[in-house]
Image 1 (spheres, rainbow, N blue to C red):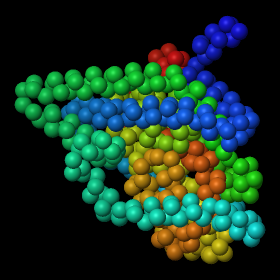
Image 2 (image 1 turned 135 degrees about the horizontal axis):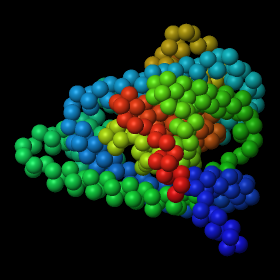
Image 3 (image 1 turned 60 degrees about the horizontal axis):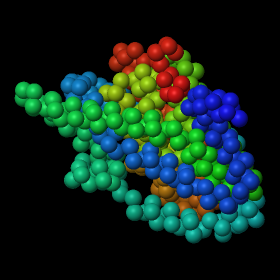
Image 4 (image 1 turned 60 degrees about the vertical axis):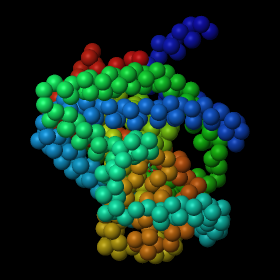
Amino acid sequence: MTNLFKLFLRTRLHTKILLGLLVGIPVGLLLGPRAEYIRPIGDLFIRLIRMIVVPLVFASLFVGTASLGNIRKLGRIGVKTITYYLCTTAIAIMIGLALGNAVRPGSGLDEDTKAQLLASYQTEALEKIEIARQKPSVVETLIRIVPANPVESLAEANMLQIIFFALLMGIAVTLVPGNKGKPLIDFFDAVSEAMIQMVHIVMKLAPIGVLALIAAVVGKFGAEILFSLLKYSLVVIAGLAIHMLVVYSTAVRFLARRGPLEFFRGIRPAQLIAFSTSSSNATLPVTMECAEENLGVSEEVSSFVLPLGATINMDGTALYQGVAAIFIAQVYGLPLTFVDQLTIVLMATLASIGAAGVPGIGIITLAMVLETLGLPLEGIALILGVDRLLDMCRTAVNVTGDTSAALIVASTEGEPVLPSSEGGLKADER
Ligand code: ASP
């Protein structure tokens, strides 16, 4: 027994998290809805990592920008990042649309199942539609990037506003004459270091947190619903797998000139946490840690590219929206023209920019896409039952997209990323 315990202690972190995930499934099946009782352990874990997000992002982005001290380089990094994010998001939606058109997941759904799904999830769907209707317009979203009160932005964890303020403050501090700005940089440097240590402490709880989260999801999930939406779910999952394995691998291989396998190995803890929490925002501290320690990305690049990605880059979500829109149109027997499908590409890209990386946001932005296309909004009731499961998968893809961007931007900036295994993969060994 003690040997087993010692072995467990020596096991790498990501293996322990994976173990937590694998054990969580039978625990959830066994406990069924009673798995809700252990959910607070998972929620506690999510709160612990979310607690680190704001101070970590602000401090490290401020220090990163201040130490970069080069506005031109900052602009270049910004352009590369945003271009990569937009291109990969568009590719993701096109994969979703292509699969949706080829497999036609909505055509096999019989009338009884349709009526049943609509009835069971109607109330929940109406709530989501209401939230979607309250979303600000694109122009408003862009204006709101500038905070009226940065303290409010920090308190509300408004990522884009925090990024904007940290960047501007980082630039401003380098313009302060003499050495006066240095104490401020040193202070936030210490804050950022302390936050990284806090990530290490919190991650010790990750295996048990993940176990509880997965058990709660599995326990609540009815297998029948998955069965009736099997074709749709499989199309989304296949699309996500293609995007992850083909698009990111190709990008890492040709744009960063690094091995995709090492890349995937380095980001495993972040993918597992993203999968279990369904939130790119909550995963941020782990994502940043993996990018910096396992991939060797500098703090300057990771603290800009990753928080920005958690908010504006959601390839998995966009892909899912492509499939979901087609699915709903097919179930209702409404044909989507080529122009409609182009609208989906545009709308889903824009929607992913304006949405924060929190659980279930994809279904709300989907309502916006459906509205633009004139598709029946209540159609989201059809897919709500499997949304949590698909959310887990698409969040893992979202986080993978963000980290691939960090690696590519860092490598094109001449950083010695993905160091050999003697130097890197520290988080793996912890
Ligand atoms: N949960 C996803 C994320 O945090 C967003 C979504 O697709 O709902 O990235």
